[in-house]
Amino acid sequence: MYMKFGIIGAGVVGTTIATLLDNAGWQCIGVNTRSNKSYERFCSYLQTPRLRLDELAKIADVLFITTQDSSIEEVAIQLTKEKENKPRQTWVHCSGSLRSEIMCQNLDLPVGYLSIHPLQAFANIDSALLLMQGTNFGIEGDSQESEEIGEAVVKLLGGIPHKIDPTQKTLYHAGAVVASNYLVSLAFLAVKLFEQAGINKQSALESLLPLMAGSYHNIEKLGLPNALTGPIARGDAEVVGKHLQEIPSDLKDVYKGLGRLAMELGEERNVLVGGSYNREALKELDILLSLANCEGGDEG
Image (cartoon, rainbow, N blue to C red; front, side, top):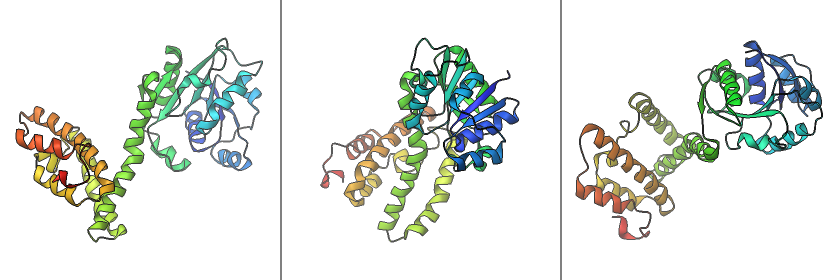
């Protein structure tokens, strides 16, 4: 499948997609960007003419709208107003939170709509070019044809495509946020607790990173729920109770919420290995980790 494509928005994702697709045999016919600096940076990776939206709309088989999320609909509105869009063109955005349908501003326009979202955090173009290989993508579009184009694009990029339900895309994006952004928040929570124990922030982080890396390794090798370890995996309500007696009150709800998820994993793990929680321990854990508990002495 050979396609001529255009890029609207010359940031990290747009430049990376253009470079990799052009290297894979598709033809980048042009880029549209408001910034001279971003265009110069784009051309340091791929020599491509700077074109207006109407020029791209006339020629491209596929248009990638790789602007900030807040600008995607605005660009689609401008493209919809063009008089000479190439028939059966496909418009693609890379947002994890917005559906592909946000680009549809005229149901009669002979255009396909597609979203491909890389499940990866790209710090810059050079790292993105390396990380794209093996990256998982969430794909959703307005038709099977659009989604087939999406699968082809992802494979040319070296990625792994996964079709998602567009009506549940918000939950897909929430999951990605938890796995990426909230992992950083989780490290912050652990550092705050270490600081309470007298270890300074830098030393705390240096101490915790190998532990977190070990847990990541266990998840990768053993999967869920077998990677779970610790007091909740053992059903040790006494240890959990001591934690909740000492943890600062503003952090208890977070600990409890994570603990309840650990209990769910623990029960799944027990089923797999043919074991079970001690009934009394399970009841005590359930009480300890209830978010309905007051901040007073109920936890202990």
